[in-house]
Amino acid sequence: MKITILDDWFDTLRGLPCFQKLAGHEVTVWNDHVQDTDILAERLADAEAVALFRERTKIQGDLLDRLPNLKLISQRSVYPHIDVPACTRNGVLLCSDQHAGSPSYAAAELTFGLVLAAMRQIPQQMASLQAGNWQMGVGHSVRHKTMGIWSYGRLGKAVAKYARAFDMDVQVWGGEQSCAEAVEDGFRKAESREAFFATSDVVCLLIRLYPATRGMITAADLAAMHQQSLLVNTSRAGLIEEGALVKALQAGRPGMAAVDVFEHEPIGKEGHPLLTMPNVVATPHIGYVSQEEYDLQFNDIFEQILAFDRGEPIAMINPEVWKG
Image (cartoon, rainbow, N blue to C red; front, side):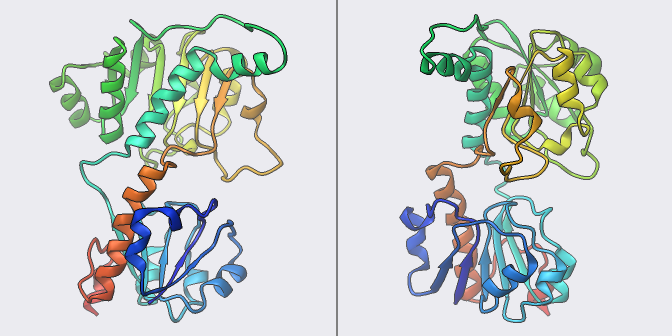
C-alpha cells in the first residue's frame, strides 16, 4: 500500500520498533505541519492510507473530496478533527483504536510533573540560576495538600494514584459513575462543584473535549479557587471558558497555572498571553509525546493498516464503508 504519515515533526517514527511493521509498503513521512487544503491534497494525492498523529491535522470534507485514491485513515483515540460523514461519503474507512481501559501514562506522568514543576517553581528557579542569580522565591510542597481531579476517568485514576503516593488528599468531581468509582477506590467526592474549586490546592482537568464540555470551566469556577492554588490543564484548552484563565490569573485566583494545551496549536511566533505570565508553567502539548508512548500508539495504528490490507479491518468507526 501507499501509506502517508503526517506531522512526524522530529522524524521519530522511523526509529521506533513498530515502524518495521510497514516493511514492504511504500511509506512517505512528512516532518512539518500544514493545514492548507491545496498543499494537503497534493501531498496525499497518491496515498491509499493516511496515518495521523492524534489531532494535529484536521481532515475535512473539502480535502477528502479531492482524494479519490484514499481508502483508509488510521489513527488512535478520539476523532473530533475528522469529518466522519465525509469519509463515508467518499468511501474512506476510518479506523481508530479507543484503547479502552488503557490510559496514556505519558500524559498522566506529565500532569503530575507539571504539578511539581509549578508548585516548586522549577522552571523559574532554573531561569534564575541560568541568569547568574540564586534562589528566586519559595515554592510549596504537595504533601498533605488537596488535589481535585475532574474527572475520574482513565487519566484521572492514574493521576490520583500518583497523588496518593505523595500523601496528597484527593477529591473528585464529575459524573455520578466516575465519582462512585473514585469512592470505591478510597478517594472522596467533593461536597459540591463550588466546594471542589474552593477547597482544592491543585485542580487537574482531565476531561475529554466534546461540544457538551466546551467552556464548562467558567470564570466563576476559577474565581472560587484560593490565591495559592494551582490549575493544571493537560486535556484541552477549550474546556475553559474563552479568555477566562488569563483574566483569573491576573486577578490572583488561582494563583498559578500549568498548561500543556492551547486554543490554537501549534503556537507560532505570535505567542500566547499565558507564556508571558510569571505564575504559569507551560509546555507545547507534550502529554503523549514520548518515544514509549509513540511506539505504543503507532503499533496500534500500523496494525490497523495491516489488518485493512489483509481484508480484515479492525477498530472501524464507519463500518458501513467496508460493508458497502
